[in-house]
Image (cartoon, rainbow, N blue to C red; front, side, top):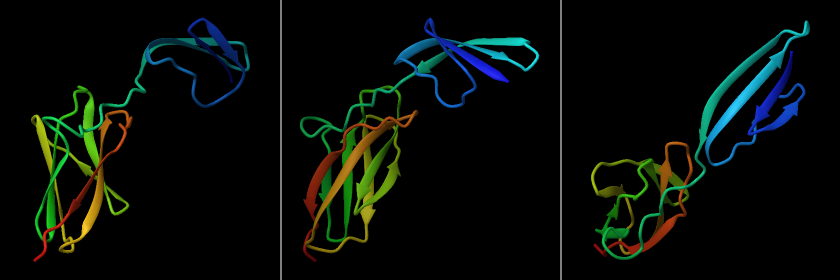
Length: 146
């Protein structure tokens, strides 16, 4: 079967598989397929492409990323991203990514099992439903001595 993909007035012909180039926003796509006997099948539809990442957690002001450390744990708090399509947050600690979710205007994530009187760096990113990730917001904190 030969496929002919028409997109935004441009035509790409030939047998292929993969992605049709889309623009950010709403795209009208028409796909025409032709079998070995010359029978044509056409499908039309709308595809929405979103490649815009949500806002990164703030570093200052109300809602900024903060660390509240004890001797062996820390609670990270930050304000919710302004992007409506934020799905979750990614907390990266010691090279490991952890998914953090929450409701409301402020979010929190607790890390436990930390060594006392030790400096750590953690980053937090907002991630939307399509996997677009904001820039990472870093925070450096020191756990309390025992």
